[in-house]
Image 1 (tube, rainbow, N blue to C red):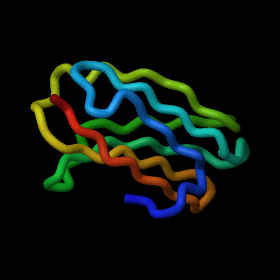
Image 2 (cartoon, rainbow, N blue to C red):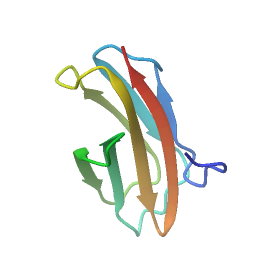
Image 3 (spheres, rainbow, N blue to C red):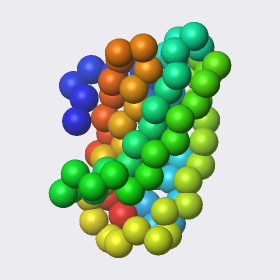
Image 4 (cartoon, rainbow, N blue to C red):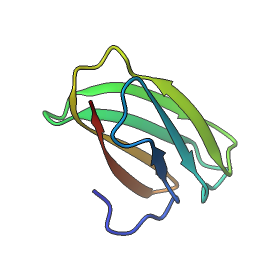
Length: 88
């Protein structure tokens, strides 16, 4: 989990039941942005790639995931932030 937060990543609610909201405020639009959701075993359960974004606001339905701990990571222009989330 990131000690600093270079892309301004926020995730809510946490813990969540079915849907999670993700925002990132410090993106470089000339670089692509990759969002990944990974389980505690390191398995990537979702990947999205965005282009031409200086900010990101997205909602994800994660009702198909089992209860447990997951990590949301965003990478943009060699800057990386990770947020720990818990599914009830």
